[in-house]
Amino acid sequence: MPCIKGDREYILNLYGRLPLSIKEARGMYLYDEDGRAYLDFYSGIAVNLLGHQHPKVMEAIKNQLEDYIHLSNYFCTHAQVNLAMQLVQSSFAGKVFFANSGTEANEAMLKLARKYGRGISENKINFVSLIRGFHGRTFGGMSLTGNDSYKTQFGPTIEGITHVPINDVDALREAVDENTCGIIFEVIQGEGGLLAVSDKFIEAIKETAGRNKALILIDEVQTGLMRTGKLFAHEHFDITPDAVTLAKGLGGGLPLAAMLVRDTLEHVLVRGDHGSTFGGNPVACAAGSAIMKVLLEENFRESVNLKSAYLMEKLTYLKDKYPLIITEIRGMGLMIGLEVGDYAERIRVEAQENGLLLNITGKTVIRLLPALIVEEKDFDLFLKIMDDVLSGM
Image (cartoon, one colour):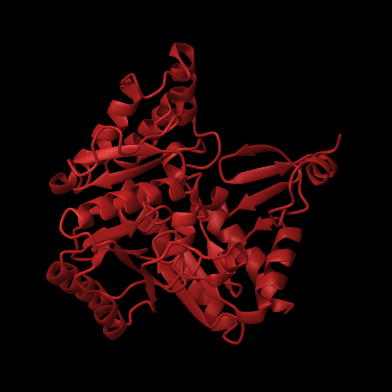
């Protein structure tokens, strides 16, 4: 049965599927069943950090498969330990908890903050989050998300969560009080149009969190792991979080997420407080460890930043040439948004017809998430296709 026909017949229609049936993926490209190549700027929505079928990731997966696929978390595994050690040694964290997805990691972070807060006061259970932020589709993650379109159809969400506009210092200071156990935010709002926090807002978060003994909780599900030109996006700012969540690119395409916890909080959650049957699957962790080795290689970060500068040069050329279409360029590193207003869907469709796959976020922003292995020749092809598409708008 053709894939698209079977998908429509047997799978709940919850996604805006593209009318493509992909047979193979290699490096920066997807290939459909007719053999046509598409330059992939989705990267699995920031998942395929090293592109498709990266040899070091594939080798790690195959080697782990030969030993065992799953044991359960009643056993320690070398794959888990190795990845946890890499994450701790490369970050602020003292300990790591593994989950399967970003929203599950955020659920763990919610429980960490709630238990921490109740250790101070029974009423210290509230959160402050950001309007247009996105933290997942479980009830906890959905409640934190500052976009009603993801949740109003499901009825009441978790109480005690206040949403404030990004970079609104006065609103933040008014919302955070002695009953706030955590302030949760993304450094760049991946689903919210690639809006970034400001230095002034970060300073306000630090001040209000410190004064009210609230935890600083950063969702790096999309921004983490060198996506913005640093291993963690919060490293662009003078801030040390209490907990950070990772997912997407962590497992190299396999389901894997993590909550990184500051050493002062590593004893808040104890045995039996939380868990996951599949969290930290050995095969996924082996893939994650291989990815971390590449990301931490000498000069890898420099190469990402050089590529980012080259891409920004190309995008600035396009913006200057088509100022009525591209009105703003946002983001950091290789996580870039182009504000194009009502042109977004038309650009996406016509780019796809010309062999370029682009994603839309916030309804009006073209989101560029190329794999970190992208080369100048890929950006040159991107520019040519975009130039052709925009010239016909």
